[in-house]
Image (cartoon, rainbow, N blue to C red; front, side, top):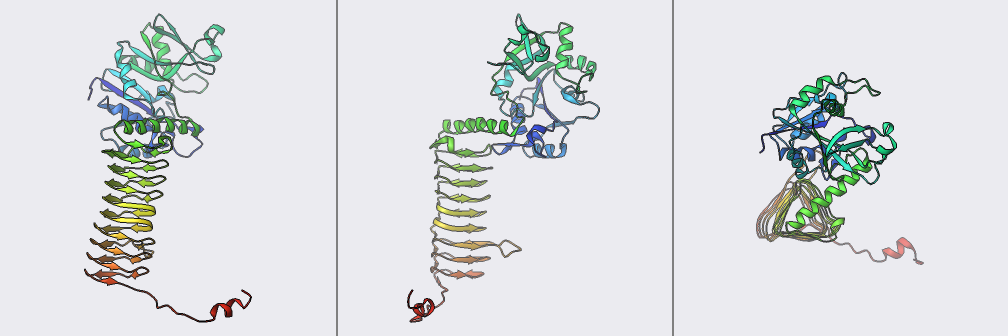
Length: 434
């Protein structure tokens, strides 16, 4: 891992335009908080990643520590030192080169971060070229250097024609930050300390500031729920493309939802409308249309259409058909063709689960296990009242309720109410005119 770059990620803001009680950087894109993606890109390039937090700081820190070790968190004093410049005042980077990212820019990539390190300038400032720059502060560039940033309200008519705007990511020499952060003032309309003022102060001293033209899509900030949806669409396209390039077949890929934690092995087929969530692994399997798989492992199996694997399900060499729900169960070499619920169960190879089978795993207080051995034939409309254990080579007749206990090998399990036949009942109940 490079040891010449410190990366600071600003993640202290509330994000009022998100219209949510949740901190902005904790809103999810493809199953992970947007701050996760900024840290992921940073950790690939630096051993010194510093995250500045304030609003809901405990929740933000706890969330990121689920994914990453060795992060440094700095708590911003927003009461006395608000703003982006204030966020940097307590940061102590250990390397001479310091890159400042934003926690609400989840689409930035490692490639884009590396571009900042190709310049020896004291400051490298990201800029975007827009077709319509109205509403943005303009970045004035002369002879390949940034000479000033002009807010639109202060811009001349000629400056308003400039298409380059500030993208909000900067690389500084640490010495520049040390020299100019103490000189920042909050004598402005918002009473905040702005990081952009470091650039203005440095420019007054003829410090070299180089512009870096970046792609708008990667430096797009997320400020609203609409922005969130656009960013998720872009991220989802990246995820799907990555896995298709790795050999996964996707039918109508734009209809398939795949989260960041999903992994594939070998060659799998994913049909249209599938939803793959959490830490899911699909290996050499066929997931059929409109199935949902959550935090589960599927190996050498087929699932669906219209099936649901809930968290902690493990399938190997198994067929799961339509309208089958599996929850926290391990199925090895099993066939469950349709209309069944299998929860808190372990089922071994050669076993067939008939339509309408239910594991009754919850008594209202506790969950219980159902264990089914090899080569068991479970007839349709069977209820297995856990805790129950079925040995190998057992047949369960259709319509049977199997109550708690252990059932030995080589037997038939049968429970049915005898049929009653009452002659003339239909006419008696509905009348002769029915």
